[in-house]
Length: 290
Image (cartoon, rainbow, N blue to C red; front, side, top):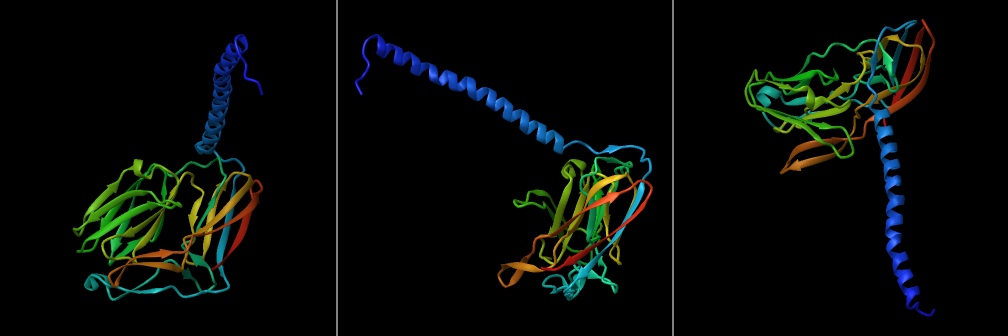
């Protein structure tokens, strides 16, 4: 193709200079539109739970039962501080009652936007006693503080992580003195979700789960696998069963001793449930190990 010359060449240069300006005028509105979309989605995801009077509220109860393999939990041989910890520990992750009910599972309403008032923020306690966490699994309402207490005359360390694909360290508390009490402030538990805690002080069998709840419709199943919600507003909900997982998939070693046990991914089961006004609804979940 013949190259332009004279006035034509100046026109081409002027046109080329305008192209980036036109592109910028196009990109800026697109960026603004994208920002609006992202902010809209974020705002929708972070809409706070609305407390209020529940009219025509219902009761939702249920049970979580083990289906299929009811494998007994692992037994750990302690490798440090046997005078305090004992020689063996039974894994608290898998507790099945005589009727097959699974204790320690978390059940909650996933998409509830409004309902009865939350429990007032308080200070919950996670204790370390004879090299075990008590409770093993707990619900902490959003806005509450968490007290870490060492009831043993040895060093314990509570290292808590956000349960995610790339876990974020939330707090790391060393307690070398019996009776030591450390309060975790609300800003460290400011996001709803699941937090896993473990001991980095040579007691790898110690682990616990802290459920930071953004609304009051969370429950931990009892020894019979039962759960119960009261004052549930009429509507259609997704009821979620969450269980922390049972099987050990990996062991991180330090010399010949286990430094850390890594467990399988949690179990998550969802059900759509219709809750009519002033009714009693019952649901049953079956939990089958992988």
